[in-house]
Length: 225
Image (cartoon, rainbow, N blue to C red; front, side, top):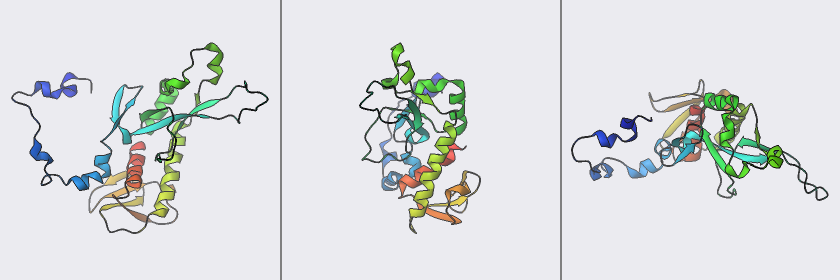
């Protein structure tokens, strides 16, 4: 993606260059449908993967944050050290959640395992927790060597709960079934996810209007690709 032709393709196109307003006309694109389409929504906002220095669509990334893994500090020992860990944050961020320093990593299990094993995970520590003082080195965040498995469990827990809450619908959407992760577009859209995400049902229909769940399923499939 760093080749000049791919970075600035317009520089290599001869003739006048301008935006084609007619392509944005509703007769070409149903803007209302695009607003609720999880594929289109996944491309709206981008986030930087600090290791590769490449920007990816936000919904193709995993959000990482630093959490304390030690018990509350005792009033009798206010200077006692605390331990921190870089961990995956909830896949669906509710408005009520307080913002916290975080970074973003590509949503792919193989890539996550590579970053952890190679030591590149240190680049994902938010700047607030990058201590330069040698006395604070002990408080530097650590990471679980099983980060990929932790992300998998977060996906499964979220999807399983939300599939149980999904009511019947006749709106446009996709059928979610158990199987090898992937998507099939023949005879309607069918998304396959691991059996562990289901609570007994053989399949669940998920309308695109339920964007959080539809997007979560697509991200889970991408994570295992």
